[in-house]
Length: 294
Image 1 (tube, helix red, strand yellow):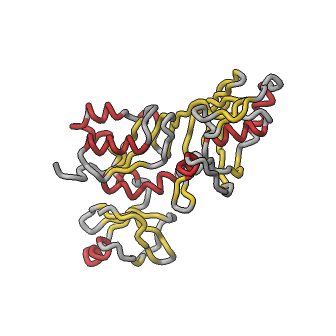
Image 2 (cartoon, rainbow, N blue to C red):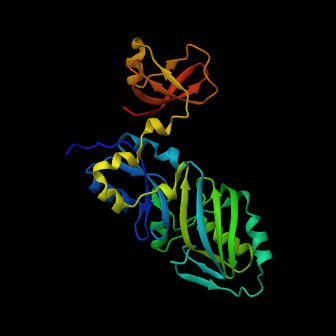
Image 3 (tube, rainbow, N blue to C red):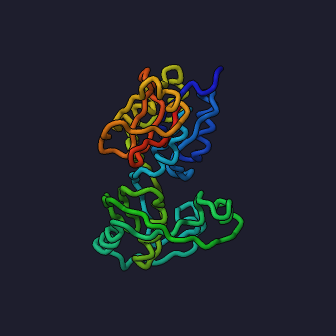
């Protein structure tokens, strides 16, 4: 069977026990094509939305990773672990009997807005070409620099101490288990993440996500579940080249703007035959290739 039949983004519900890489490997087997990737790694014990990129959509990985995300989590106060979640080695247990709901709520909401978050050792971030998680498994800890993350919203769903269930809308690069750890430290009792569900990545919501089993069972009509790149960028202004400039567009060359552009940084570029070719970025009076989809 020919490779790269499918192009676009499919909203997969990642089940517990699978790594994000496992999902990609299984998708390659089901769809019989190699060019498949994902955006936004989820820990094996976490579940929820994992956008899987097919064919020419694989170049969008960085763009989707940059998008805001929403999670539903359960935090366990009074327990600190090396991984900052319940699966890790317990480092310390502390008494939580002095806590009350109002105190906990106040501290949680104090994290709204921007705060400096130290990436955990058990993460896929790389230092010196090696993943932090691999170094952590070797018993090594390396210096990391705190990064600015943004907590757009926190909705506290239930406080049944020492457990707290909440929803959070966060910026790229935010670790929810580190947020749980930091909340616990601010309460002086420690804390870790007990469970995590990712409910949204950009425009992809958990209610629309499908499982790997559903992909396999509905493989023959799976195209209806795939969002094309063109549709994903449908909100951007559209520009068509004239026939004499088609070759420049196809080759990913810069293009001159011949009229006052719309107020947008990015544009959908089509050739004179109205074929979607690329996303271009405006720079002064020129358009430069940003993502090519030939």
